[in-house]
Length: 129
Image (cartoon, rainbow, N blue to C red; front, side):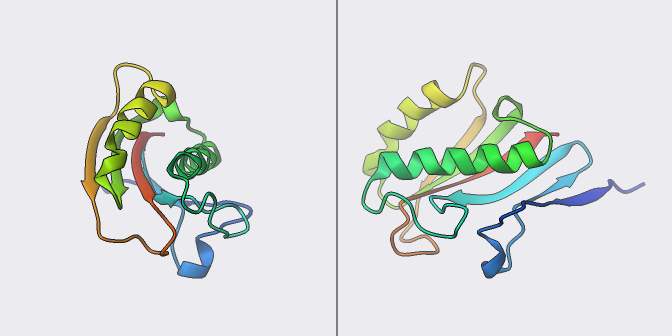
């Protein structure tokens, strides 16, 4: 028996122009596409400001989770992509602010670039539905 799957839909989807779904529910798990500092109109937020970009990423994650009937406290795994590992300590601080113990499993990697040149951070998520 295969798990049921359903796309997560947003009323205003900034990823639609890139042919990307916000995420999928498969059984009792949610798999979110990487969320970056892009607002609902598709504009990059906080150019050159890592903290502003990280806040927008978390707003976007919350928005997709909410659309799927879930919330940040249901996140079990994050993968964080940074264009500059110098921002890693800010990620550690943010985990303590935006998550509660027990913290989600985490992989953090530095990448040469993200999809748009002004993006500094992207996070994808696996969460319970």
